Image (cartoon, rainbow, N blue to C red; front, side, top):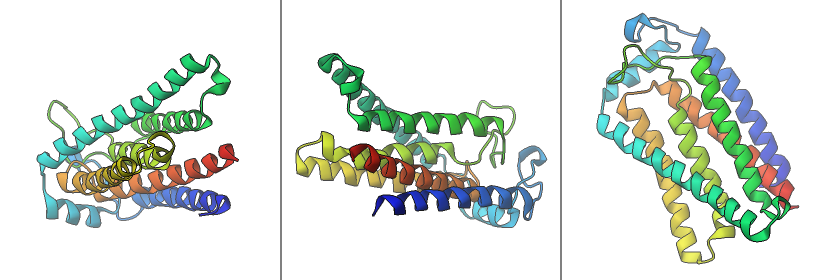
Length: 217
């Protein structure tokens, strides 16, 4: 895909994310959440929630994937640190590492933002919590999709063994897919939360891919 197309995709996905937020906040809003919390697109969300119920096995499984994603991010950070020590200059650290770091900062910023600006609350009160927590977008979905998706784009540069590289790419893709499905069927998010997490992930990955093209020249 050409660089311009990637930025267009990012813009379209970002716009869709904003539209999705507006829909969630204004269309078919009803008090179907715990403690009477109001949820948009309530009929769709309630139908999907009733269909799957709660499957905490999938919640636990996707939590493990979250830990794996953090370890992947840490591995790239360690790669950058090793380069800095060996090359003795921040300017000589791979531009891809800096670009990835910027992406991670944006993800963290969005995570904090949507903990403060609450769009939806969870469909369940989680163990150990007294009240429903912020639920939109699924930050777990966003974290894993962005970390694994960006890793797929960089593996060719850092893994020279072609077979291993391809196997890791497939693994990253599988983790992304299973996370989206697992988070949905676990019952800890509304359907609209998962869709929101996927849309914002597409936007971020499209921006990242476009910026990678720029820094690589």
